[in-house]
Image 1: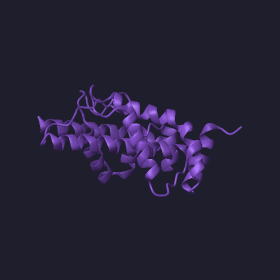
Image 2: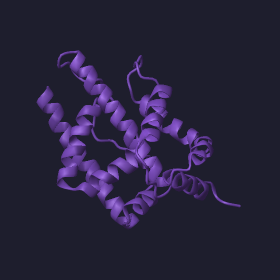
Image 3: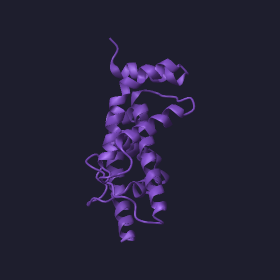
Image 4: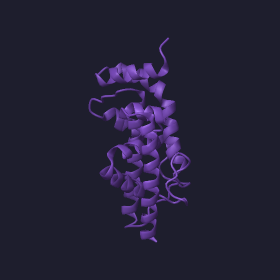
Length: 193
């Protein structure tokens, strides 16, 4: 009997090769985890947020399905990319809300237990996205570790597999990135105050 991860990987690869029926068989296998990821993001948003979990999931699904010839390596890669797509949707939404408010403050976002990047709650997706871009310029792999672990929901071992490095390297990068992001977001908060 084929494991769920192997089955998902096989279907992802078939979908990437253009087999449309693979996508139809894949969706029921990944839906619950994608919904959990979307709920994880939306749980951090303020109450009354105009974007709901289902809408975030649907938008992410559309972007994933519309991507030209996806080349999925495995299940972990798919969920990592899915998390990044959801992050991008929320960052875009936050930026558009800021623009509508003519430069008003972005909506606060608690980063939760997976990555505590500030001592006090209130970091937002826009500031976090800006800090991650700065980290990527400094060290692309460390930024990718944050994307995969925090936004993709991957374990240390899955992240190591995607990045083709050791779990120990991922653990060191994760520790550094959390500390670096915490410092950057504090600076951002001080400048905004």
